[in-house]
Image (cartoon, rainbow, N blue to C red; front, side, top):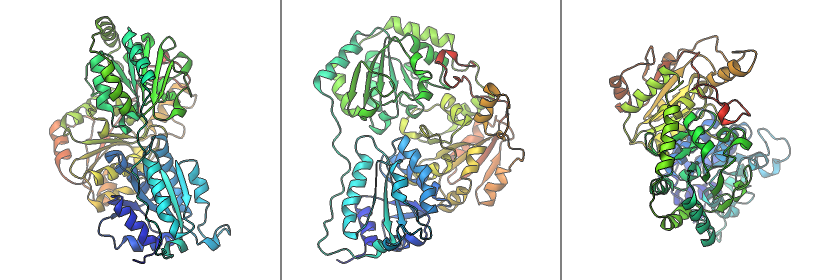
Length: 552
């Protein structure tokens, strides 16, 4: 059957199981939109900014583990996508960005809305390619999906000139089967035994759990390891929920805003088992002072992370699911009463609630008690993000979506919309600050139009809270450039977009209020005022060691 390249693209996306694409049309991608309009399987979500299209795709991918897809036109459409794609690269999120491009004859002439998209995309993707001939599309698309899902997941990008989109596919073109990713990497037996021996011999081991466990769907196996060997665990921001908050082996989050107890335990460990984490500076503080006396077993699917920042004693490049499944039979159950007693003593010395802000903590705990257990929790970036990480009762790593490596403000609302499109049967709670919301506030229109089940909770302190906090602690000009002199009325703005909205008036709205909000279908916005003097504590000063944390 004869078809255009644009029609072939839509057909191949349908065959791959794509059911949602987010985007904004423009001149150079209209042939694809024309083909997409005739699809009976793929829904299109019209966002209000191309960056939001990338974040919607991320929300869909983060909530499902599959590939999220977004569309944009050339020039500013493509450049607007870059931030969301870069964010996906840092957090290993599989998304496919598809952009239009000026016709082939005009490439390199500085044509209207022409940029070298592939050159820009190359540094923020695992794979990027321009389709120069319609017959090449199946092979390029197959490679893109395979790269997005194989090994360490990540974003990919395909750029298609407008005249290629309308080019007809030759009768003999091969429709390559699109792979779901290459086979996972399994560890060698000898190194497995070495890791098992190190764990068995350790007196004071700690698990250091990272976001790679989420991507590998290996968090349940990590929990079995912790419980079987009686090993306490710290988690990065991206791994929260791997061990539920309140689990007896959970030390909570480590890092810049991590618990003092977790840092105290890390100073005494003799073995650090690192699973899917990368020794990020926000997690480790000054790397030279991070567990200097501990032996390190580091497991990651990306061999480039092994030894990049900390030289491990045992380095294992492997899929975490394969590694843990093979490791567990080599380890017998054991108890570590002396180490657990010491950990308990350190937790008593440095309690979770010591030094933290009372009002945000109480409010987040109240929302957590009222929320259905299946709710997906999304956080934007900033002070509120740290409070959510510290105090919200996260219990499932797949239901916690936040921007880690790039720390992108404006992430929250569009990612929540994407997650709600992927999981319409559950409520999505989007915690955001006023600063983050303002960066993509136009997507309230998208939320209203799509009638998504997203509850936007705005912690409003009329400032860029985390920036203002660092200025107050470490600089001579506190508040300069980080305070909003003109307050915004977010309730009125949301209602203007057609979204029900409320103002708690304080941070202490009761459980009945939150239960009603979270169980009523459809979008909603709630403003929660927060005193601008509240700080996210403890905080490790930039470049300092964990033991130099301020607060708590």
